Amino acid sequence: LPPQGDLPPLSCGSLADVIATFAHHVSALHGHVGQVAGEVEDPCFAPFAWREGELCGTPRQSLARASIMAATGSTNPRIIDDYSFLFKRGETKGLWRNMTAELLSFGERVDARNEARERAGRRRYRVFEPRNIETSVAV
Image (cartoon, rainbow, N blue to C red; front, side):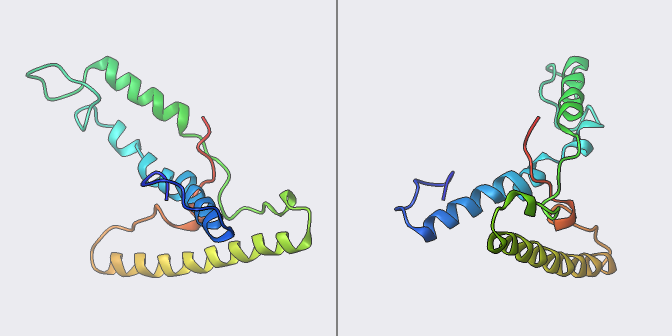
């Protein structure tokens, strides 16, 4: 599915797959690739640009990175928030509530895996915790 290839032939199933892929891209994947606070705090870690012979980014580039983080780092609505007001029919409201319940159940599995990671001396991987996934790529 996009962006890896062309759109599949039109059908209800392929439409559902495309919508699910886009929903993933603007929620969990965006959160995964957009977590930049750790990288921005150190001007020597992966700067946008640097002068030959220097290890750290220039002050201008450091300010640009910090500005991007400040401009895009606001809190957005979470994927598990109640959006049932967007749906007119009880059936579609129920579908949304079912999906939210499935996400919360998935979150319990993620929590269990993260607890096992911590017991093994590793850090929690929090990007795909449903309670932390936002639903917007708005700036």
